[in-house]
Amino acid sequence: TRSTRPQRLLKAVQKHATRGDPQSVISAIDHFCRHSEWAMNVGDEKGSILDSVVSELNPEKVLELGTYCGYSTVRIARLLPPGARLITLEFNADYAAIARQVIAWAGLEDKVQLVEGASEDWIPRMKEHFGIETFDFVFLDHWKDRYLPDTKLMEDCGLLRKGTVLLADNVICPGVPDYLEYVRNGLFYKSCYFKSHLEYTKAEDGLEKSVFLG
Ligand SMILES: Cc1ncnc2c1ncn2[C@@H]1O[C@H](/C=C/CNC(=O)c2cc(-c3ccc(F)cc3)cc(O)c2O)C[C@H]1O
Ligand SMILES: [Mg+2]
Image (cartoon, rainbow, N blue to C red; front, side):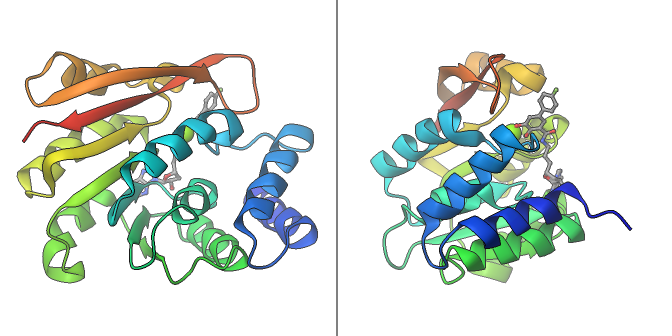
């Protein structure tokens, strides 16, 4: 049977990227998505904004919601200091299998824990299962109607501390209106918008950076 797009994306990484070189993995995926087949990675333009937020923060404990093929996982993990940890949640087994191989090709498996399952099932288990007190940085890039409920769930589970940074992809396209209203007009966050473009296109999109006020 015909291969899937994530399988073809992985093949492009294995063909064009150098094992153990995260930048070459990122470049191979961006080239594949720009010239062969569009895929819903955060991409190079928004990815540079993601890089600057992570580099400035130097987080020890990172959570990613929605691994997909592992593109943003690699972008984030390559910038983490030694000893820092990234937990990424993905409930689609096929995507998870591809992402594990992409992360391994980049040589970042020691910094990344890919957990197969739904965010609402795993967020309440972060403390007892992974020994996480609070997260320093959370990247939201999963189903858009899950951003707000999962943010409230992280608050309720005590996983956010004063200064925790949430960075949300796709706040314009496809859009997350309920989440935006909550972080911009609520009392618990200081929020700002980074205008950019939908990955590999000219359409507007952007990232919302929200700092938890505790
Ligand atoms: C609740 C939960 N738990 C664990 N994993 C979860 C989850 N919800 C989704 N996931 C996993 O994350 C991934 C889902 C990501 C959803 N992202 C999207 O739907 C998405 C869509 C677009 C887009 C824009 C314009 C268009 F015309 C078409 C598409 C662009 C993007 O950057 C996106 O992230 C894969 C899925 O299995
Ligand atoms: Mg996205």
